[in-house]
Structure formats: C-alpha cells, structure tokens
Amino acid sequence: MMSKRFFLTTAIDYPNSRPHIGTAFEKIGADAQARYRRMQGHEVFFLMGNDENTVKVARRAEELGQETKAYCDNMAEQFKEVWRALDLSFSDFIQTSEERHHKGCQAFIQKVKDNGHIYKGSYEGWYCNGCESFKSERELDEKQHCPVHNAPALRRQEPCWFFALSAFRDKLLEFYKENPDFIQPESRRNEVISLVETELKDVNITRSGESWGIRVPFDPEFTIYVWFDALLNYITAIGYGTDPDRFAQWWPADLHVIGKDITRFHCALWPAMCMAAGIAPPKRVFGHGFVHHKGEKMSKTIGNVVEPMDLLKEVGADAFRYFFLRECPFPGDGDFSYRRFIEVYNSDLANNLGNLYSRVVGLIGRNFAGALPVSDKPVTWPGVMSPSEIVSIWSGHMEALRYNQALQLIWAEVLVPANQHAERMAPWSLVKTDPAASAVVLRDLIEPIRIASILLKPFMPKVAETLYQSFSFEQVWDTISSGHASQIAQLSGELKVLAPTENGKVKPLFPRLQAKAEDEV
Image (cartoon, rainbow, N blue to C red; front, side):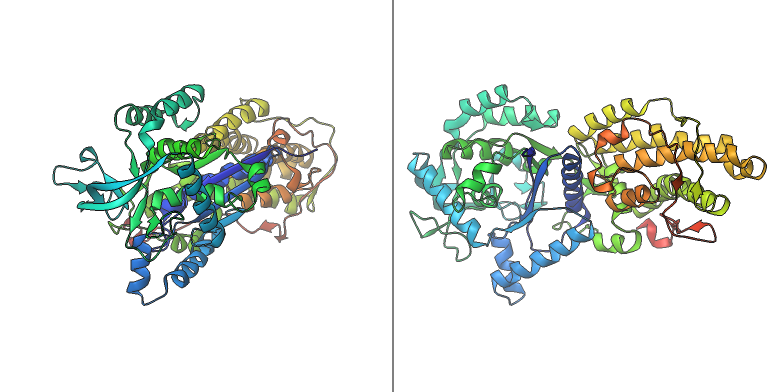
C-alpha cells in the first residue's frame, strides 16, 4: 500500500551572505512539520534551496572577485552546513542556477506565453534594489523609502515582458472562496484579498541588459525577472520541464512555508502563474512571523543579524530549536536575546525536562541495578488531562503550525505534573524505607517521559530519541507515531534503563548555562 505523500517547501534564500537566526526560524518550523507528517505515516518531500539568479548575488560575487556560479555553489554548501547543524531533514536543496531549474523555468514561461498571458511593453516605477521588485506608492514611506530595507527606492524605466496578472482577479477571488484554508494564518487572508480586489496589476517578469540569469526562450535579450524565476523552484525541483511523471506524483504542494513579508507573491502572483500555465495552485501557504532582536526585525541590510552557528556550538541543535519554536509564536512575531535564551533553557530544559530524566535514570541505576522489577500495579498518570486528550490537542496545534502552543501543552500537561508528582512522592527518600513503593513511583514517572519523548520528536529529534531509547520500551523508535502517546502504557514487565551511567549518574541532557556580561548584547 502506497503511503500518503506530503510535499512541503520553504522560501529559498538569497546567498549574498550566510543565514541568520531569523532565516533559521522558518526552516526549523518547516522541519517540525515535515517530521510531524512522517509520524502520521506520510511520505514527505521537504524542499529547501537558494535564490541565486539575482542582481545582488552577482554583485556580491563580483565584489569578491569570483565567478558568480562558483560563488553560488560555495554559498550553497555554507547554507547546507548550517541547515544540517540544525538537524533539518530536507529531502532536496535546489539552487536556481542549476540546469534543471533553468530548463523548467524556460518551459514554464514559454507555456504561459503560448497560453496568451504574456505580452511585451515597457515599465516605469519605484524600484527597491533590496527587494528586487517594483513598489507602489502605498508600499513606500513619504520619502519614497522602502520600509523593509530602510533605503530609498529608485525611479526606473525599462522595456519588458509583462505577465497579465490583472486578468486573474476573478479567478483568484473564486479560488480563495473555494479554498478558505489556502492562506494561513487567517490574519494574512484579508490582506491578500484586499490586494487582489483593489491593486492587482500586470507585472514585469523580465530584465534587460543582465548577463546573469535565465534567458527568456522567446526573446533572449531578456532574462527572467527574479520572482517569476524564484517561485518556480517549487515545481522545477520535482521535475517540471524535465520529469513529467515525477512532477505529477508530487504536485500540487501541500504547504509552502514563507515569511509574512512575501505573502502577496505566494498567494496572488504564484497561484495566478499556475493557473496561466494550466497546473493546479498549491494547497496551502503559511506566512510565518519574524524573529526580532532588541525589538527590530533581523535583516542583513540593517546589520542586526545573529549567526546561528555561534549559538549552536554552545547549546546544540535541540535547545536552539526548542527556544525559537517555544518562545516565538510561528504565526506571529517573537524576540530573541541571549539573556532570555538562558532563562528559558535553564528553566524548561535543564531544571524541568533534564532534571526529571536524570532523577529517574539515576535512581534506577543506583538503587535497582538499572532495571525496575516486574510489577502488578497499574501505572498512575500524574496529570489532569489524559494522554488521549493531550495528543488530540497537540495534533491540532501541529496541523495549524502553532508550535509554541504544542510545546506549552507538553510542559503544562506532561512534564510539570510529572515533576510535581516526583516532589510529592520523593522516590529518592522512599527508596530508603520502601524500595518496592519507590519502584512504583518511578514507573509512574517513566510514562510521562515516554509520552513527552514522542510528542517532542518533531521539535527536538535527538533529545527525544535519547529519552525514548534510555528505556526498554517495546515499540521501535523509528516506527513511533503520535498514536503511541495517546494511551498509557502499562509497563508491568521488567523495565531496563539503557542509558549509560557512571556510579548511578547519567550525563545531563542540558547542563545549566551561566549568564555572562555579553549575554546582555
């Protein structure tokens, strides 16, 4: 029986500099969704990549005295180094300078022209070099500055080929009506509908006089304009223009994960492009919020970015992933500071999850030779909400990409009650007078650890596996689904601790962090 397929993408990134933690926020959010879908039995194709056919990339390569393609290839490896360090489970990484992308783009633009949706003209307007797009007066401030890059827009006129986007107004509005979940979260929907109803204009999709980029097949004096090129990575990576059978297997995309600042391109221009080419639009677009630093959006242009690898080297991928998905609501905005990171790390990870794990494993190692004896007593669940209720609510949060709420649920309904039960029952004291009673309490505490490990699998993959594999549970980790957390496992047989210990002590999952003066920065 063929498994269900789930095609998930992130926005592709400009490789004019290395990724920052704002960029990483998007990727770990998408990875959490990819891992969740695999737990639900889907065959997942998770696509990431770099947006290379841009003027700013060519300029950066020139500044460094490098060939543009060589520069792009080097930067792609640097990006993938960061993404692997974050334990991102992407299936493919597309570079838009690749031949498969060039072939697919040329096939697509030719198809749209053959279908009568592209015409030649000239364009004049305010242009932002940072965004690589023309801006309406409404999108600029009173000084004609782009608010995204805090830089002046330039008046620009050029011959070009237009995509007749305005002709798709009614089709787009009907599409939104028939597919109410297409634009997520709901707060972005009204903004896009208003744009389509009032400001949908034909768009310039070419550039003239550029040596770097993809040539327009029906007019080689022009290269394909960045958005009409970049958006196509979602289909060229799965075979559009090169492998029609593979494309038919995976398209339409189930979910595009993108920043809220590019929602209009993905929710208006992109579905119209698909309609013009005769293919189905994607099923859902999720516009996530931003990570701020000192109250400002992180931006390479502004220069307030934080390098992910600096933090990763100190705390590891799982703590990094936990902080941003717990502290920064994925549909909205969040803020990062080193001080807040240390507070959350020590409170949630070191003191709560890590301490519970170390106590249980250590007590069993020191007092029961690493194995709890057979018991005829049923496991007592320490929380108020049942595991089935927890999993149901958790699944709803995961489907809606409300990751912070999913994580809050695990702590509030699983880990905090378990720690409170441990404090009440004090098995470390009880073992001195009644080892059998202490063993019962430890079984009660192992069950929340098991369930937490399963529900943490999309968020903290290595730590979740360590938690689960520390005990002799029957189900193989790689086959674990969320359903395995929905029922209390009556752990009646001998239960072994498999985690390595020294003198009854286990290596801490999360060694406490000490604040330093620079943590204020």
